[in-house]
Length: 115
Length: 111
Image (cartoon, rainbow over the protein chains, first blue to last red):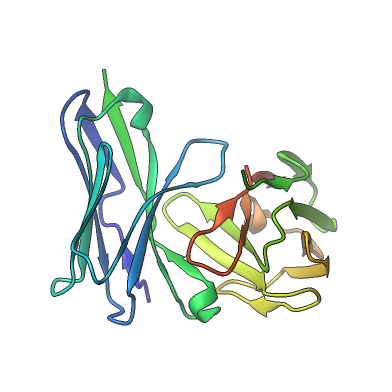
């Protein structure tokens, strides 16, 4: 059972426009969410996070919004740049095997920013 | 900066071979993890360790084992490699909070 869902495998956006990446979750016990960015042939790197006590967290061009009632979060990138082209993973602590030690990841969304 | 180093970036092995993937972290983190990444499947946890000589199964432990003899080192072992274990393997460490620090990954191809 997929507890963190990213339903869009890919997204293409023009440079300078907004990129919106979506993530849904099913486990209401999740209280913290993270976004990771991954380039090909590299490990994922932490991008931004949000606690469930907030509904928005901003860091430069990156903003994450959390809608707890809808169990939905989104990552906004404004303005998008070609260097943002990567796979983005949504994640939450907790999961079936390792409990709070574990990050449960979505399947990822591949963002392509077109110059 | 936290550094997580995976010993091999690319490996090619034959079916049935024993494979060792090594991971070392330099930040004295308690927790270490092995994930695999496959297209369309995201990152899936294989095993994790929260202390020396301690290990716990993740979501997909079948066909794998691990070893943590020293705090800084966490090894993933494929006792008898199979073609369905062709994947990108990612090691990560964590001081105990929510953020994981990943290595650069090891791309394993099993022929």
